[in-house]
Image 1 (cartoon, rainbow, N blue to C red):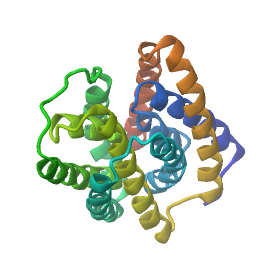
Image 2 (cartoon, rainbow, N blue to C red):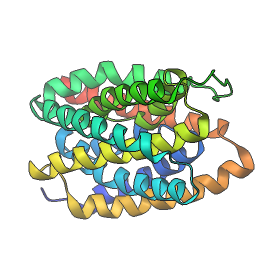
Image 3 (cartoon, rainbow, N blue to C red):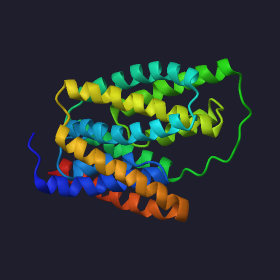
Length: 253
């Protein structure tokens, strides 16, 4: 598929914004996937290319967490296996659905996902820790379920992982953050491999947008230390409304 200069102009700034939002408040995928579709990419091509650009940002974040010692590798390794299987299943399922039906599904999933992520508050509650065995088993279940979701669709995955690992598996917030990054990187790369093998990734666009995603993450980290997360949520709502209108117009046309 050929990509125009206009599509680069539309997508790259929005991917920068997605990286910025992800670093500040989480949920950057709610902007990055719509960015590709607003620019006119078919659904599966948009999802596949988004996996490449978002995966670059996730890889950097995972490396930073690993370097700072925030990842519990024993639990993370088992979660990776479950995430790999779940994401592969989700991506293959997504490829079986036509563009038109996928857009109808997105009209249902998108508002629910957006509402849940935008309503998330800080994770201040500290749950009573479970035994290591129980925590690991519950973490593996979370990784498999969210893996299917990320392979199939994806936006909000990092936020969902963090919430579920702390609320269901009772992991400490710092460890949950680290394990969530490893799971998210696994689901990204697994789904990306499936989409690559099926010719649903625009490499030059994804790599270029990935650089903007990394830049957005760095600027967002700097912004967060000074002004916090509240001011970015209106930006997310604007992009989501535009995306919702775009899908509706495509289905009506």
